[in-house]
Amino acid sequence: MRMRILERFVYEGLPSRVVFGWGALDVLLEEVERFEARRILVLATPEQQAQAARIAGLLGDRSAGVFAGAAMHTPTSVTDEAIAVVRAADADCTLAVGGGSTTGLGKAISKRTELRQIVVPTTYAGSEMTPILGETSEGVKTTERSARLLPGLVIYDPQLTLSLPRQLSVTSGINAIAHAVEALYARDRNPIVSMMAEEGIRSIAAALPRIVDAPGDRDARSDALYGAWLCGIALGAVGMALHHKLCHVLGGSFDLPHSETHTVLLPHVMAYNAISVPEAARRVARALGEEDAGGGLFKLARDAGAPTALRDLGMPAADLDRAADLASLNPYWNPRPIDRRAIRSLLDDAWHGRDPAGQSD
Ligand code: NAD
Image (cartoon, rainbow, N blue to C red):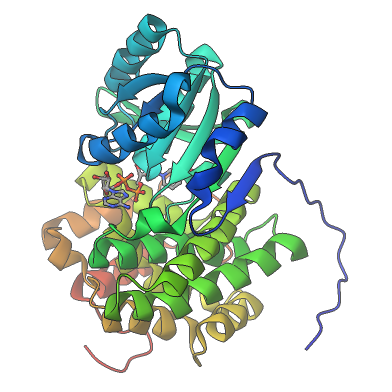
């Protein structure tokens, strides 16, 4: 059914060049030349050092070496170390190969040095499409948004996601879906971003069961990364709401793992908000091929063997009250008003891993 566009809206496209496709890394040198990068420092986590070394090899004499110290939550101490390496190597550009943690390091370096950024994403987190940076210093996380933080060149090669373990593939995929879900009901939503968001959900949701069955499935890996790209655009383009706030609180204050926390909470936040945004809920359900948006998201995670309960992520029940307090502080926009009692009840459902469609306990 074609939707009618009745409201005035603003759409702001973010400028970056994207190369997508199986084997896209084959054109790395051409792309780097076009980008006019001469000395490129490759960034990675310690776990992806070998992948970083391979990319440095592909760069040949344009490589300024590898810094494989990226860490979750972008600690400023790591950024300082990396900048010392940038200076010693006289680098004029960074290339982050990895997930959101490594991309975050590239952004943090760029913020302080104005170095341009290339990103080769290997998870579905989507940070490469956003002008957003979250950093931690002495345990405190701060987030900022600035057009200067957006990477200029992104090369999506689904081949690099083959090594992403099954479970991380699923939770990272649902992390991406969470961006698109919140984009569909964002206060500043618009039809262009909503179209990308719905297609992103559809593409990832269709891919995840195939990846679980066969992690080497080339088409499924391509569909998932394509969907992640679209969901990343949605995250960068419009504002997020309750879901991202809750994940921020649980990740920051209770040290819960990033993509798993997104996976557990999303069905419950969708169910909480559905009553206020029936059209967005309908589009999420349609993209999932399900009747109910929250129930469909829960089923997607459960059937793929992902965690569905906060208690399984190690969160003590005794912390739920404080989490509800923190999530209700500093009023922020959400399509359904934030009510402390309702949030506490949402967290209780998520802690137990109840199906929001009410089909199991
Ligand atoms: P991550 O980058 O922390 O990666 C998790 C682990 O998986 C790491 O050890 C990494 O080396 C490994 N890994 C990544 N790709 C792999 C692959 N293909 N094969 C094998 N191992 C692989 O995880 P993430 O979920 O991508 O990113 C989470 C972080 O990114 C959080 O800190 C989050 O806040 C941030 N983030 C920021 C934005 C933004 O717009 N600023 C968006 C999304 C996420």
